[in-house]
View 1 (cartoon, one colour):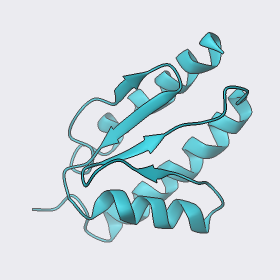
View 2: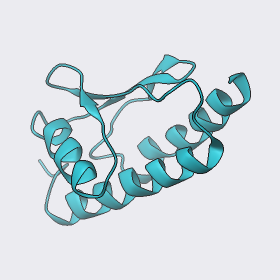
View 3: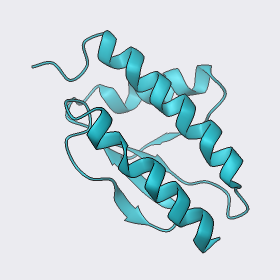
Amino acid sequence: MNETAAYLATLLDRLPKLFPTIIPEQIRGRGLMRGIPFAHPDAPAELVKRARQRGVLLLTAGKDAVRLVPSLTVTKEECNHAMGVVESCLVTMQEDGFGKQ
């Protein structure tokens, strides 16, 4: 589990670098439970909706974050799949204007 959590952390740490206008801060949390903070208050719900349409379930955490709470038995392959979906959703959100002031 610790190895998978560390692997997930490396995948998540890329997000603020790839999408600085949408995700302005570092990812929060420890282990497998993580929170992705957003600059725009509508972005968390939008990411949850788009990811769900692609088969990945996420949770909002308040109005400014998305919570990741995978199973303790999650694999690296499942992390890759989920993060691929999250990144593709963020790309389309960026194209749709999220993160612009």
